Image (cartoon, rainbow, N blue to C red):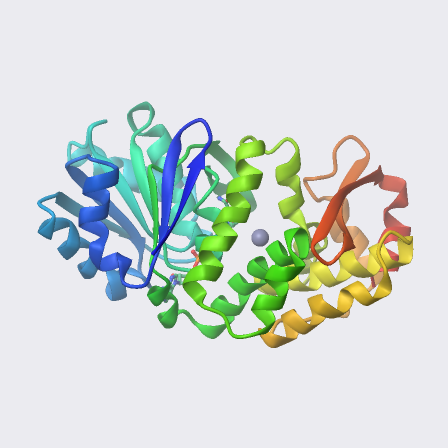
Length: 347
Ligand SMILES: NC(=O)c1ccc[n+]([C@@H]2O[C@H](COP(=O)([O-])OP(=O)(O)OC[C@H]3O[C@@H](n4cnc5c(N)ncnc54)[C@H](O)[C@@H]3O)[C@@H](O)[C@H]2O)c1
Ligand SMILES: [Zn+2]
C-alpha cells in the first residue's frame, strides 16, 4: 500500500493499494472516526462494488446506508444534489455522520458538493473507482455540478477526510475509460517528469503509478489550494481539449480530448520556438501506447469558434499551458488577438 499525506487547509491521507476496498471499514474507522456513513454511488458502480463497501463498513462496526443515482454527466446536477440532501435529512444525518463517494469523478464531485453544504458541511471520504478520479478529481477539494449545460458552474472547495483507492476496481472499467484516465497520467509526466514518462513506456505497477500521480497533485495543490496560480498548470491540453470535446459533441471523451489537446500544445510550443521539436516524440509514443488519439482533424475556424467561449479567457487574455520540454511546462499568457496564430501553429 502507498500513502500520500496532503496538507492544505486540512490534512488528510490518500491510500492506494490493491484490495483496499475490502478494508474500507477499518480504514475509515481508523482515519475518519465517524460512526455512521452514507455511501453514494452511481448505477454502474453500485451493482459491482456497493455490497463490498457496505459489508466492510458493517464488519468494522459502523452504521451505513446507501444512495445510488444514475450515471453520466447529465445527472451531475442540482436535482441530483437535492435528491441526496432530502435522503440525508430523512435519514436524520447530522454533522457527526459522514459520506463516502464510491465511483468516478462525477460521484466524487457530487458527493463532495453535498458534503460541503449539508448542515454547513460534513465530512466525506473519497473512494475513486476510475483512473481519472484516482489521479485527478479525488485529491484537491474541488467539488461541483453542472448548471444549464455548463460544466461545474456551481461548486465549492471542500477537502475529503480520506482518499482510499483500490486499483483493482479499474479492472471493470470500460477500456475507453481506462485510456481516458491514462491521458491525465501522461499529463503529469509531460508536466513534471520525463523519468516518470519513461516508466510509463515500460512495464509499470498501477498502484505505484497512481500513488505517484497523487503525489504530483499533492505538490501542486499544497502550493495553490484555491487554483489561482501554479494549479493552472494542470490545464495542460485542456484549453484545446475542451474545444475538441465541444466541437465533437463529446464524441471524444475527456481524456481523448486532452490527449489531442496536449499534442496541440506541444505543436504550438515548437512553432513558437519555446520547445525543441523532438520533445513531442515521447508524448506521442505514450499516447499511442494507451490507444489515445493524436489528432481530431478539426479546422482552424472550428477550433477558434469553440475556444472563444472557453472560461479561461479572462478580460481579453488567454492562458495556455505550453511545454519547454517533455517534463517541464509553463503558463503562457497572451492577448486573445494572438489566438488565431496559436491555433494555426497547433494544428
Ligand atoms: N474535482 C476535480 O478536481 C475534477 C478534476 C477532473 C475531472 N473532474 C470531473 O470528473 C468527472 C469525470 O470523471 P470520470 O472520468 O471518473 O467519469 P465518471 O464518473 O462518469 O465515470 C466514468 C464511467 O465509468 C463508470 N465507472 C466508474 N467506475 C467504474 C468501475 N470501476 N467499473 C466500471 N464502471 C465504472 C461510471 O459509472 C461512468 O459511466 C467530470 O464530471 C469532471 O468534471 C473533476
Ligand atoms: Zn482533465
